Structure formats: C-alpha cells, structure tokens
Image (cartoon, rainbow, N blue to C red; front, top):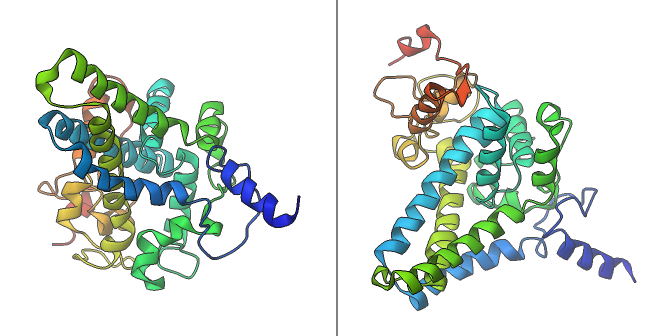
Length: 305
C-alpha cells in the first residue's frame, strides 16, 4: 500500500478514533477528515423533507440548551479553567453531554482553549480573527494542525481514564444522541401520533439542526466576540463583551470580562449581566453537585463602567 492510500485510510479511521493519526502535517484543511462535518451541514436541507412539528422544535431547543450548558459550564469553566469543583460522576456525565455537541472531546477542547488564553490574538492563537474572520470562526477547526490533543497542556484531567477514552472516541457521544433522537421520534410516531413527529424528523431537528446551530453559536465567541462588542477592560487582546452572544451562549458573551479575569466561575461581572451558566452551576452547588465556585473579585464589580 503506497503512502497516499495509507493516508486515505488513516483519515477514514480517524473519523472513529481521533488518535489513529499521529503527527502534524501543518496548515491546510484536512478534507477527508472533515467530511462528516460537511455532511452534517448539508443534512440541514433535509428539514424540507421531514417537515415541522412542535415536538421536533422542543427537542431541538432542549438538545441545544443542555449541550450548551455542558460546553459553557464544563468544557469551558471546569475543564479549561477549573473555576469550580464537581463530583466525578457529574464531571463524567457532562463531559459526555458536551461531547455529544460534536465539538470533539473535552481534553481536546480544553487544551486548545488554554492555549488560546496563553496566546490570545497573537500568531500562535489558532482562532484569532486577526488571521481572518472565517478562519477564526471555523477554518482553524478543520486544519491538520488543530486535530491533535496536546495532553501536556491538560495533564490534570488527562489522568482520568474515562476522559481519555471519551476524548479518543469522540464520535460515540454524538452518534448516541442521533440514535436516541431517531428512536424518540419513532416511538412518538407509534405511541403518540398526535405529536406529528417521526424518527427522521426528530433526527433532523433534535440532532442535525440543533448541533449545527450549537456549533456556530459556540465558535462565534472565537470570531464575533473578538470583533464586535464593548471593551470594559484593557486586556492586550481583542476580546469584547457582546450581550446578544451572552444570551445565546448562556453567559459566554461577556468575553472581555472573562479575558480580564478568567478565574471566576461567573463571567457576567455586573448584576445585570445575565449569566445563565453561572446560575445553573450555583443551583447545582445548592444540591451538592458542585462546590467552590470562584467569585468575581469585589473591585472588578465596580472598577469600570
């Protein structure tokens, strides 16, 4: 088998095992490896075939909200920044839900994010809009040099066997969600026909549309929130506070706040800066599921307008 054939088959295997291909081939989009990503976007057109129902819309919104919280609360504020503590089983559950977002595994995500803060809006920041808006939004995600997980950056959580497994086989969680949505739609079609839904419809709305929407809203923090919005703090990068993104991402849009002080669990520093992720984590703390939520320092709540 020649080298091109080996490269082809290794790229296909990497759809299922993210560590099947080692090494770094530098810049450039890895077209074979991103075929599932492209197909997922094309599958959105199936909405014109499967139609609409209230049940499908509710499933889409629920899948979006639950996975957005898993990304913002756990992928970001827990795995990336360690701004609170959680029980191991809670960590594992939300790591799996976050992986169902099809945004790769928790260790990959957190390692890249830690590097983003280390090199924010410099040459080494893979998703800075200074290198191009489209690249910061999603092209970086598709490059050869972005696929690997730098376990040295995430050594603290890389010790967890379940997280290592989930990070390596990151296709399992989204595939499980897709199967669940199809089964749910098929069950409703059979046992609750008044719902007006079906397996294919629930798959398209509850998985495909919600996953694509979730992806683009999430990565807008890398692109939009470094271009448009207000700057309360001088951070040395281009981070912005964007109230619309804060609403859509459950609090992540207070991005300039976050870049100024990333050690706080709460990213909305003012009382009026709604941060639904923080409120959910605070509620989980009342139930004993999380604890040691790191506060916003008092002087940051009043030091700037």
